[in-house]
Length: 462
Image (cartoon, rainbow, N blue to C red):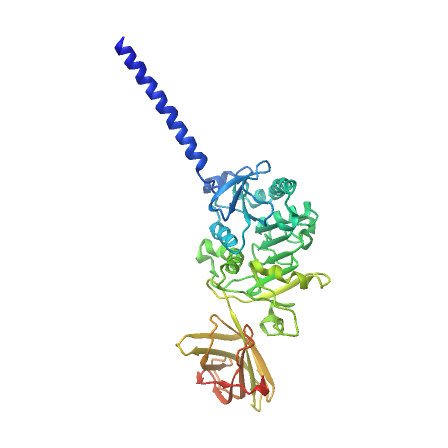
């Protein structure tokens, strides 16, 4: 009897222990932060059915998401801006490497709701068509969620969608369902394949939100070439991005680096250490030739800023008909990508016309140097005619103490030419209030560096 009682007690203890363990496991599961779906390349090969997860981040839970859906809004505060981040095609099944930085960056600049739209189950496939065919279904799910927000008192003015690649067109489809009344859509290199040449109802369009801004960084491959927004930014002309591999020997980066650069340029606007200014222009060539850098002067509108603060320009766009603008700018090879623009004004007194390029190097008191090679097309130097060259530097040196110039015709053989400079002037576009620097009576021997100390330009020449 005692043995039976002992065995019975032992089994009861095991049962209690098992129940307690299950409760602990359930409790641990309930408290675990939902994370972005991580799939393998095998999943991409066999394909995945669509399943959309919505994960909410706020300043109260920056790193631990809360699962939400059209039935449960969770901690989402409908009185604040809500930003949706929508990724694109995922041919390997891995989470986007930039997602965490984008969430944190947005929360750092504004107290808002950030909703990560995880449709990795659906976007993960090696067959691009299968992913693109699911974009409208994702948009319908997002519309249902926004409808729930509106029922709880949210405003469409406070809805902001950031769509990457296919995600940009998903954003456009959502905007169409709300008759273009969403507050803002940002398209980060909207997908080109299967969307190029499509009518507005089948892609992102300027009418899909109150303000639509687009960054095109891979127009010759994975991205969309033509304008899709109220303002369309084309970094480095929109195709080959500096710092990205130019041949297939660069591996996977060769295929995705240009396409992803749009995301990293947007991220740079959130970090505060680099404000990228763009210049409205008809073409990249005109921008490079310095024909479109007059914005920001007292007589003109301010220049548009890239990224999060691009909507500061929407009031100016409302004055245009149609309210669409293309803007160009150059970037550095590495983060934070900022380029600082200067004009180099040169008046020569050569008897004969000279054609060639100029390389200019600046040095400050601390010994820091920065260089710009202005060689995208030969400059034409004529006697007593001012040539204004747009120089781009990776650093912005506050107090320039030394300047060097190199003139080159690009010819390997043949005579070496001289460029006789009557006056050279250096002026900053980013900081027009800075003193302009001049130098007079210089003779540049071709392919030979000439170093000199500039002086302040007389006010009469400013």
